[in-house]
Image (cartoon, rainbow, N blue to C red):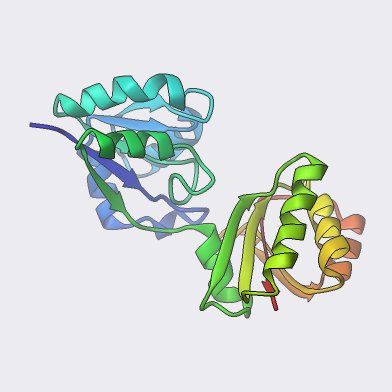
Length: 227
């Protein structure tokens, strides 16, 4: 009998957001794949969960996927979590899920928090259609190309654009949006569900000014509307 691969969502900040189903699933696994054993170890300790952790990140996904598929074929129950939120969303796991599906292994998602949906629902921007871009490329040329293609697409579709950004590249991203789209309305959300959560709704030039004066801290989700 084959095992099951569980894709398990965990809190993006507030630990109270974990679901009972996620806790029950984590407690009944044979192996749990994690990005960082230190980060996930704190989560498991908080909920008194004892499960074998295996490091599984962007650097090891390709080399470890085959061995994990073999474990699943031999009946093991394997779970995957990211450091925070829903696995595979700008995090490792896609290759594993794809290979599991190809091999006939059952894949079950345990739904829960994800920063992009949280940010969208509180943004005040239209929620009927959205485009999620993950993280913009680090290289300026590729980043600019994506933004310019979005600008072209705005002639044909209207949607809210969502992407993640690190504090180190926030200003670069904001300036790129301003260069391509002009002084549009933007929503900058930071540290969602955490103690220092912040949601700013302003012109992109105002956001640039603010974060030029105050060093960005935390993880960011940016949103603006194509129209």
